[in-house]
Image (cartoon, rainbow, N blue to C red; front, side, top):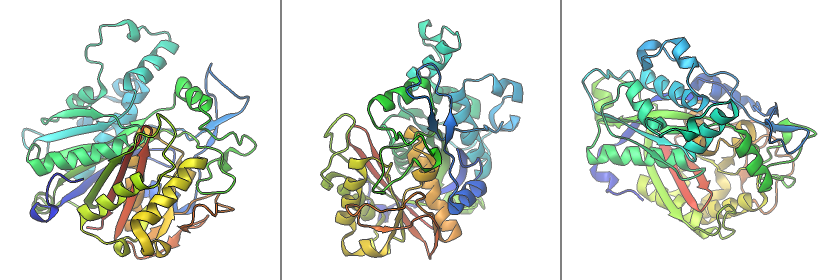
Length: 411
């Protein structure tokens, strides 16, 4: 829940957006691909830990090089960075450029990075490439501090890990810093990468879809034939600041981070709780924080990854939190197109909500051929739905019971 009464504080708004994803690297491109129902899932080489002859995921195929003024690196220097750092630095730098904030000795800009198992991933890729980083002394090996230095930020910097909700928790923490007056603005979000060990681990947990006959149709949230999620990589970053500050400097306001709700169930290390009450509390808390009623929600971006237990539990949580209004609110899962970006998922799906507001349309859940009757919601199968959208809710439910809902409102 929010640590303050929102009616007594200045609204916190989004003035910068940056992304690197399987569906593109700009807000416009991602919005267009989401509404077109395009899938980023493809056959990949999972490396030496392959579990099947054919494996698939939603990879990032291009990481744009930031302008030297944005991060202090030439294109050659940027390309020499590790993949995880490039996937974080590119969208964070892009968000700052989009916001148009002058970082030279002026505002205190903080950085909250949502990222889990950072060192394991970086060490793994380095080790498989013949490196010895894993045996080093560990100095200067935290991505968030390298990002803060390269971006020239003067505020605090921290990493938050809450599994699949990590980047959403980062957004919530950044808003809290602004409310408390610790920073003037904050760069928030998160990214994640595909790595051989992570793919093998999720496969061994039986969390991944095994529909290898047609990978683009493997991610099937809410569908009766779903059999697990498809991994993705990438994510998104945003610049948050007080509305009055954004208006005074003439910034373009993309939306308001109006509400945050959190809860924890801790039912199992990896299996989501089948009891919807815990997740529903996060949704209800976010609505209360934003001071909106269920019938004011125009679109819900569901966490729904395509797991048999998780999708049913979330459908129950949405219905429990929204009550009678549920039947009139379109719900979709953009993971059906982007795959599950793990640490970066919550931020990317917040971007999808901003795209829905910008385009006045609810993006679809592709591959939803036969909705599971246990997931009784107002689904948006296959094709986007034009609709007046001003207030959205985005759910993120992480391993271990880290439940989060963000309410985003039109500027």
